[in-house]
Length: 376
Image (cartoon, rainbow, N blue to C red; front, side, top):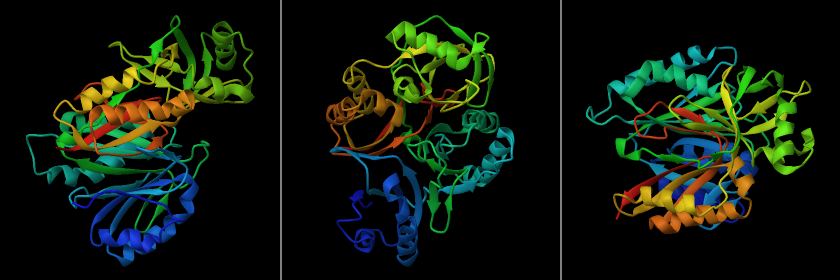
């Protein structure tokens, strides 16, 4: 198998960078500032008979830091043949789940290892507002026939852009699906802690919370920020504080799902990355204070079966906003403590996974999703 490579468009010709992958299957993680390069990628891959599957992310990640520009070229086994599925904007979440599962049925029927469930890795357009409900619909149909993992692609400005592509298409409102071997199951962690008494989302729909404890959601959030920071929060300063004190969605089993509020509507509702079901129990969360303690723990899990050759890591853009310069320290700590030779990855806009293997798939914010590949 060929090795991944990081391509800088302004340094080397793309045709030269792609030539070693002729006839191969290639995943491409593309930085948002180089989104205009998709057409060239498609043309060159068709010329070289490369099966292309790609996604646009706000930034890319390597062992050297965060990158505003460039592309990760990631060769994959031919068996990891992805499906790029357009999702009609007018369809319900259950209808979208049905569309996805219908296309996966034949792939699952042909899966060679009946004893080991594959990992279904999903890459969604981040602007789809009901991803958590789509996951529920998929789980109702597939249950434990697969493990679940995935990320959201798109713009770091939370504006709609076409962000998923293959050899012929560049799509918004879509999902890319691939079945991976059982051992490719990624780890997902967030480390956010509870800080306040539970509250009730008394009116919410999709990713919009209109009322918390029967009070306009933004007013309620303002009062929480006033208590914690002694600051008067305005809509203009909203995202600046939201990444530090996101909302937590409490589940019956004690798990906490992070929901980062990113905008305020004129009516005073909060818009989050990810859905908040009506009458959910919410609490204010406190983001991790130390970027190293959690990273060391995660690295230990990654290398339980030996040091990986490479880790593939997706790091929430909201988490990076919270930690600022220290986010690089968190990523570097994971990389150095697990003993890998290489780190590839991207900033994501929501992460999909289970807090424990085999559990129900959840849609997270503020998380790190990573996987170790190859053992030395």
